[in-house]
Image (cartoon, rainbow, N blue to C red; front, side):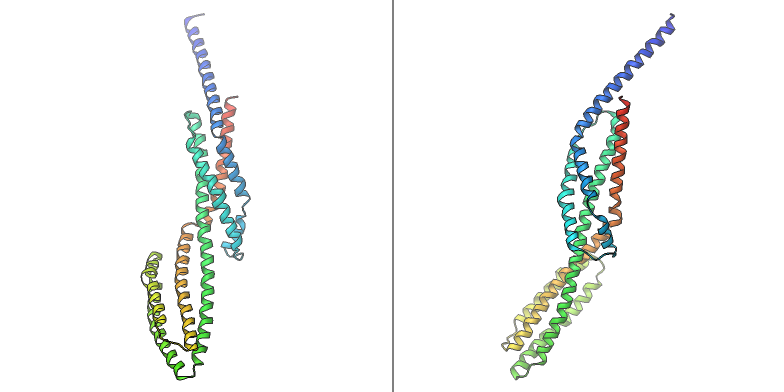
Length: 298
């Protein structure tokens, strides 16, 4: 055996030893990795099981107008997201932060797992925000419809009382009330128009808080300050006060509707739901990469 042949055999032997050591290191590190991600894997499975049991097709049908709004369903779905998915994703993030990967051969695979957790957290956060805004929007719009109907009913009842005034005292007190109502209405119409002409939601909200709501409080005080005693005038004032309190509620609900609509524009359902499929794809990719690494050690 010449010297050159001996050197080549020694190099080959050294290569085999090095490769065997690398395989042993990968196998040990992979075993450690699987142990350290065990809790996270369990949480991930729990997340997927809960999401798969949620009926998002009904949510889509409602949102796009194919079905009527079902507040009970929406509230239940909102509770599932907030009370189940949010704690799970928070725990997943906490578990992920505790995992340390030192083997370069496992870092790419771990990056896939990290991305999957991040997508699940994004989905949960955005779906929670969407449902909060959607439920608020439906509830507030329902309140606005009810208030609009109550304005009509109160107006008709008050007009009937005013027209039925007969005695001089009743007519005098009713006229005092009408004078205050006319002054109030003129101011309210002017500022309501200014409110609707504000461009941004923030400007509308500021106008309502700084001008409209304090104005309504002044109008309520003006009505209460009237010195009236007849039954008809007193009843007409009571109805008027109910209307002004409803005006207050109306503008409060209008603010809620504006804010919820703006939030719904920022968190689009058509952008949120595909995150489920993205997370599922990443999960499958991670499983394939994990299995590939296991095969390398066999």
